[in-house]
Length: 293
Image 1 (cartoon, one colour):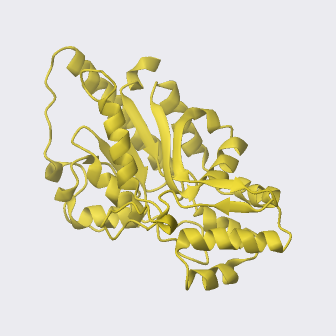
Image 2 (cartoon, helix red, strand yellow):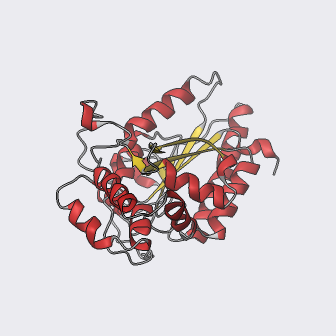
Image 3 (cartoon, rainbow, N blue to C red):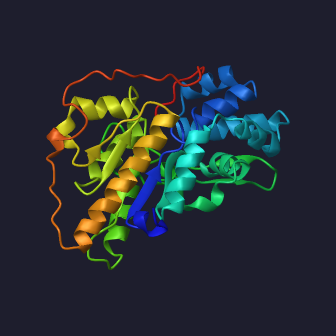
């Protein structure tokens, strides 16, 4: 396939349990022996605030940011996910990340696996190392200072509404200047991935991980989602489904260029059944705490 065939596609990945097969916060906390303390912090702090406080306590115990980055480098990342990223990029797709993890953890993984150069944009909770050498993690939408994202959907955490970010992405793509907006393929697993799913249109694709919270939310009200839904169970599945979608998009783009008319299939008739229990539920590595997103 020519490299230009995916040029009309923007692939937006979640990070935790999508690119890596674990929750990055839990992975670091468990690796550094702080699981019980993190559980205690979560009793009275929002998740994003708790992980920032946890990084402060680890710093006070003498844990360095290099040790934190080192623990992230051991997070499970399947060769199938690497292949999917590399192939989608080679086919001409633009790749982005939209994640409620944080920039430090994501950068550590991408750099370790040689993937940083494949992504044009990473939208996530900011992180930096302060003058004392302590890792600071901030909310993407800073609810501490009155700039809440304002989304009323219960599935969005206070620190980040991925739906707002997806709206910005879709608006940006609509201003590209082309006759038709590029198609978005969104991959995710958690509750926080539901709001951006609702922003996608019939031109777009949603790839929920089967048996995970966003899959359950979509199955519960399939008609609420306008995008074409294609589920995936594991990393091998992710690679196959994503590349199939890219090929479909290339064929549809060719039809549009040739003046053809694409048949739009109503959302309720697309690939995900209206009422079905997921037959494949692939467990991630057992973690001490269940991440909310």
